[in-house]
Structure formats: C-alpha cells, structure tokens
Picture 1 (cartoon, rainbow over the protein chains, first blue to last red):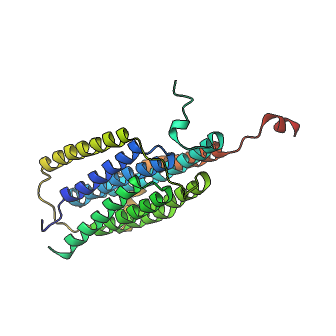
Picture 2: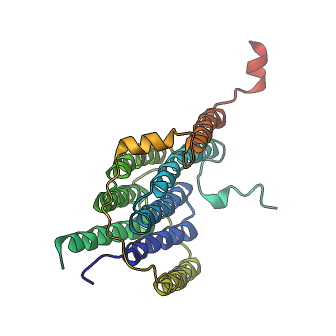
Picture 3: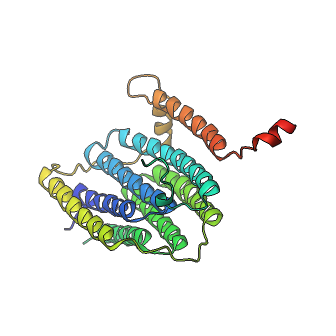
Length: 104
Length: 176
C-alpha cells in the first residue's frame, strides 16, 4: 500500500463508471441522465490516461484518445441539450416516461 | 505512506463521494453542482498523474463549458427548487444490485490480470509534442482523426441549430 499502482487508479475509474451506470438506470429526468453519461465518459478518460502513464510512458496515444473523447463529449452534450429543449417545447416535460409516442 | 499516496486517496475519495451524491440527490441543481465537483476532482487526478495539458482541457471544456450548458438547460426547463420524485423502489434496488455485481466482477478481473511491474520512467509530456504529433501526416500521426473530429463538431453545430430552431406555423409562413 505504499505505492500507487495502475490497479488503484483502475479501481477509482471502475467505481466512477458503475456510479454513472446507477444514475443512468435510476434517473428518469433527461438532464440527470445526461450527467450520468458525462460521469461514464470521465471514467473512460481516467482509464486511457492511466494506461498511457503506467504501461506505455514513452508514447502519447492515450492522451490523444482522451482529447478526442473530451471533444466528442462536448458535441454530444450540446446536441443532447438541443434535443431536450425541443422536447420540452412540445411535451412541457423532460421526463423520459412522458415521451413515449414511438414506443409501440 | 508518502504524501503523494495520501493525496491520491484524498482525490479519489472526493471524486467518488461527489459522484455518488450527484446521482442520488433529489434536487436537480444540487446534482449539477456535485457533477461540477466530480469533474474538478477528475482534473485534480490528471494533475496528480502529471498530464497537465489534459487537466487544463478538462477544466476548460467540462467545467467551463458542459456544466454551464447543463445549468442553463436546468434553468430553462425545470423549477430547480423542486424535488424530483423518488425512483421506484424496485428499480433502485435492482440498479444497486447491478452496480455491486458489475463492480465486483470487473474489479476481480482487473485484480487477477496482473499488469506487471510499474514502469518508473518520468512521464512529462510537452504540449509542443502533442501538437506536432496531432498534425503529423507520418506514421503515428493523428491528422485524420483530427479532421474527422472537426467535421463532427461542424455537423453537431449545424444539427443543434436545426433541432432547436423554432418552426413557424404554415399559415404565417404563407402570408409573407
């Protein structure tokens, strides 16, 4: 326990991933579900940086993957919020249970 | 225990507690603020691992961009003082079970894998190296994903405008 190895960091990122998963399962409000997705993407970023630092310190590939994931997360959040605001205009609610026209 | 180990434990406890509060609190605005703390904690973890550039990008884009966007959309669509309804009891019980089993299974796999000894090379990345490799067209260059991501950003910008645009009713459009 006197030294931090890659397993410790993977522990943190796995816990963060499953906390995000729990939020995605229990929440029915679209904005909070979006927040849970952001948590999951963050845990993936931690994984990429940790693998790069501890297993391949001479390379930069994990850093690039993290940069691209952050970019795509930003684009995804912007699109999701546009969809949420449009849904609020037509349904006056952003609960996923209320938007069920396409269900059957 | 050296100070670096203690700092790691403090940062990771901070991240996990803030994330747990973000997915369980019932006021949506508090949830957004706890998400903000989680993202700042992740940036601190990146600083701890020595990748200052990624930590700075994390603070600029996630904390400065995405959380502000989420808070704006909360103000546009919710009465932020109200409590959200409780999740169904069955749903939260089974989600918690899935969480516990998934976590223990994954952690068992990670623990049993055996990553080999930690390599103790210094890990300091120059930003100039990142820039050179990102725009290099040679082997291990990342210019193609860079261009693809820039097209993706453009497409998502256009898509946001199209989705959120207000469509006028037909009679009004015809009268002009």
